[in-house]
Length: 476
Image (cartoon, rainbow, N blue to C red; front, side, top):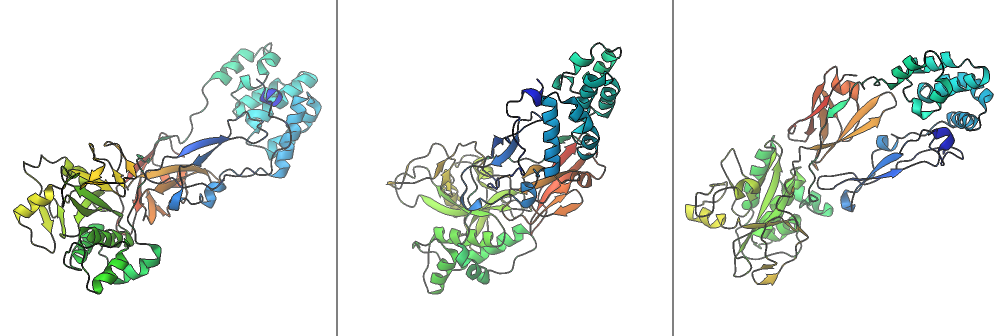
């Protein structure tokens, strides 16, 4: 098919701009979908522009960065008019006009010249004076490899050199340099929901917190002990799940239970850039009885590159001093009648019998209104429960927050790459030897620096996270 002649959409003027609509930024746990869009005129027969779109927005929905919205740039009006005039000439067999435009097409449209206009001009010259063969050879020399795009065979098949030239056109195009073979990606799961203090109360909470440590783990341990020692446990609760409000009432003499310890600890951790959420633990047979639940905090620790469980009420974690454990680690432990991991405490004494008792709560879990435990009862202590999401036990409910999404962008002077951290508190991205802001593109040639493999790592206030490889099969 001749796209210039036979494309039913090839009519009318080219639009002045092609715009990418701002959409929600893909984040951990949100699967991006794609919709194809085509401009009214598609002289090259392309399949159009792919625009990233994500699922339901929410507070994380923001516009794409300006560089991404400019990635599909408008065609200058003068070039658009030149292309339209040349296209009209080809579709109308107006070969004198097309041949007369050859000089301008060569200099003003170098991107399309070897692949479209040069062979079209060869056809025009051949139709006009039968001497288009040198122009077709020059087009092939310049990179033309699509004889089926235009009626080249019908026009030149009787030429003595056709068989050899056709063989050249049928040969493989030069390999791209570079070609991406591997890049950072994200394993998607349910949307990550953290337990952060309401924005209006953020400064009040931060003013109460001790200064952060150099590492995320040392900071988490310090805040764990701090939260545990704010008050002595009592079975009372708040309606407003706001750490600043809880602490206000504690200063007024009130005392609360595990829920409130977890509120304060989780929101304090998020306030200093450590992702955290509350987890409701339940004992076996929690659908009946009393005292069947316990609430703890689950935090992503940058320097450990994993999620760990922190018990705000008891000032403790499970595992060892240097190897704290998370839910996945704990549920893979032997059954409760066998050996169990120790609890490491920071502020309260804990006997072996105490540790045995707290271990019984690791039967099922609900985090941020989501459970992945199966089987799961719709009752808790005789009362129906509401759960936002019943996730699969194999779902990625503990996302690796070192992961990044990768974008390609035309920088106007070469291909670039940009990386989208899944860590909610990322401050930068290290691409090989280059440090950039999250989402900021870097020229691929600069990132590779004559190498075929570079490491890409999310940077936070505490550390560089585990790196992920960007690999090419060539070098720019």
